[in-house]
Amino acid sequence: MPSGDVETFHKDGSWHNRIEGESGGGVFGTHATKEPAVTEGRAEAQSRKVEHIIRSLDGTIGERNTYGHDPRDVKG
Image (cartoon, rainbow, N blue to C red; front, side):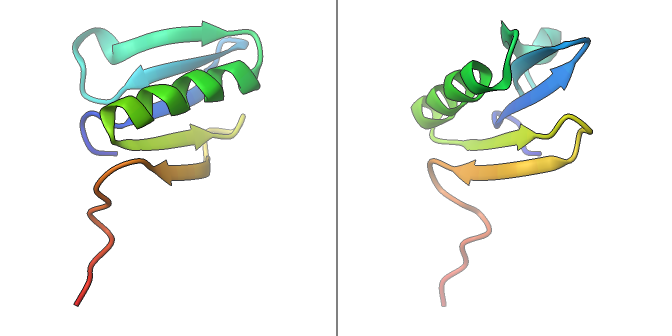
């Protein structure tokens, strides 16, 4: 995951958001359930114009959304 992307993940019984590559782990939100964590993570990703990665309980990527320049979107 590139630096600056937003990740929503589950750890220690709570859902969290973090900014990849920021000092201190970049954690900026903790929630009891997934829905408000995803809402908060999406808003932050849209504001930063970066990718939002939403992980499942088992840690695998469940969903991925891009809110800015997508480096994988190659035209030509």
